[in-house]
Image (cartoon, rainbow, N blue to C red; front, side):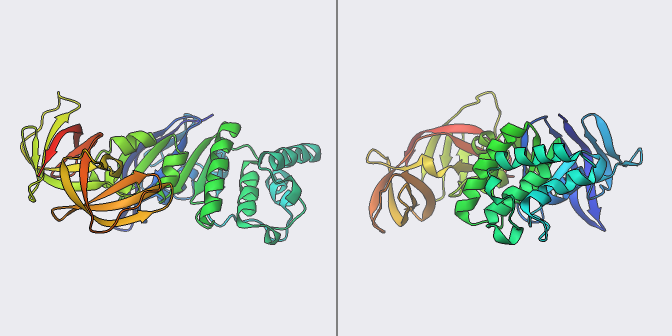
Length: 367
């Protein structure tokens, strides 16, 4: 199985820089998600690795073989990179049955008929679509078409499977089912998956590592829970997590943070070796750590309450400062009601420029 390495990859469209000096190492058998808002360069990056787009500068290697180098003038065609590509629209042949769609690539490679039949049977079973083998794409649901497209892509045994927002056309329930199937499939095929999405929930649930991009620049490349717990900057912190993290401006004086509305927090840094300066900072407070509790030390008011059964998303106001909170369970709150707020958990501290300083806990809170 291959390791994919991108060195100083840049892609320009005229004067517009779509990807800016990207360095990335994708480990063998990993499930990497390229995540970010529209126009951040994630699809362009995927297409450059696959050979569908030519980088302006840099070098790409797959399994220690250079497939692109601007300096050495190497550019190997997509067909010779041993990769599979799953498109957003599935791109199934409408005049072919499910069985024929899966077998098509193998027939082009001149596989023996008996081996084609064995491979198709194996993939039909793996994707749980045996009963649809004689149907045409128009006779299938979106999720069934998706499974056929995956089976066809996997038929030739590519070492790397690229997927560009493959679930975006499905409804919410089906997307959840297909996430489960893709994660299981990744383990069963023992392949390297590279996946593009703008959906942070997909990235969090599927990936072994997330590559989060903004304006063509890499913001963070880490396992999902590391991205969530230890975001590299305020963009990463705000992009990952639902409901959104609370990013609040404070003045820092030693171990004390003061907000303009009088909210005062005494903090303890987890990494005490890091140096930091007094002045303006940004505190990142995940909603699950803004708690509505009787033993809270700060008075707040319920601004809104959105119960969904499993959890309730609450917006609380502390002297005009609105904070997102999550209460697990089927609780509901009356708008305008006074409640005590407690701050328990781990928080992220950022500098004025948005760069992470470190994690901290709140020792005491008052107003």
